[in-house]
Length: 150
Image 1 (tube, helix red, strand yellow):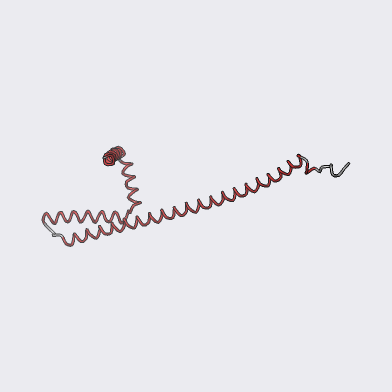
Image 2 (cartoon, helix red, strand yellow):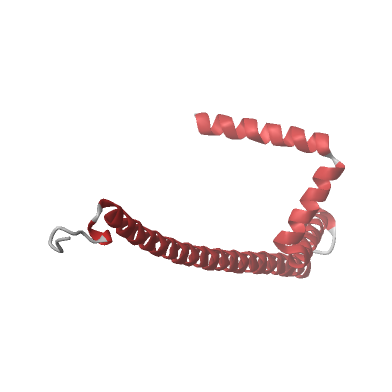
């Protein structure tokens, strides 16, 4: 047999196919590894972003609660000033006393409840009075639609 005419296994079409399968298998493994790494990185980035958004929302919520508490404190102190400055008798005195009491009560409510407590109170009110709450919602929706349409 002539060595020049003899072909080895790797020179045959079957050998070339085997080599191509080996290369393709290696490429597939590398692509899988890269996809896994990319997926892990995306998952980590998404988790970090969700954490940052949650933290920002919590901060905004606390600041809003603090702002509402400050408004309540201001209302309460305005009510006290009206009590001090208003006349003690007569129609004007009674009206000033009523306004001052309302401001003080509203201010105390805002200071104590803040936004989260107010949301709970509204939820309780809707649960106790579902039909009037539904009618108020429909009415507000109607008024909003008319306002936006014009």
